[in-house]
Image (cartoon, helix red, strand yellow):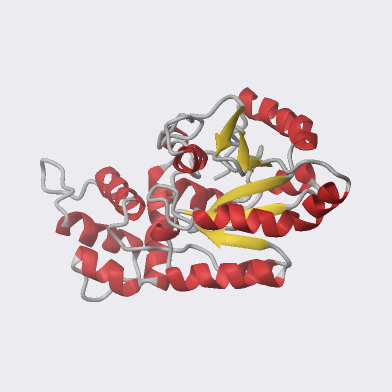
Length: 287
């Protein structure tokens, strides 16, 4: 499965981000805490270059807490500041301004020494579609300024948003790279909802989800679908899940389309509990 998805507004967004860099002090890079590496846009490093960066692991409530801690430790070991947040509930957001001040202390000290009056920190938020940028902005601003939606591509234009007296945010449209060279990255993004379902084969996504759960969280898979022993054959496993959950045709045969949709929907809606689909060791192994 090779997913190619690079609408015109995303190409435009990349140009706009590059043009606006000179206006901002720091970049807030928003990633999905369930897939911190796969939800990073490889173009971002190239685009923002040496601008100070704060990595925000959003949807931390949906991720495995122990594995999120591994990611925070990993970023710290790489010299990057990272914070785990839940923009929907507002958890961890108070740390954003203080962390930004810490990262920009030298710059603002130099400005102060030159007699420049203190001003709000200017930040740009970047991230792939559906990672929660608009939800974060609305939470920080304490009002519905940015459009939100659980479909990728809701935000289409840039806008400045004031957050109290200490922070000004430049929202940017979600940017996804032109092609996923690694098939597994595409599967992770699809499973967590970063890619529109109309572009997917749900059977591929559900198969990836089941194999992942079988390997990393077998107890949850067995408990959710009443499985005593996980069979080796994937068709047999689908049969057990479909039968247990009543995904059947009028002829009492397992409906594989419904079963695949069920599995994907339940992973996304946390029916399997908090899940993290990659750990730093995976990235280090690749490197």
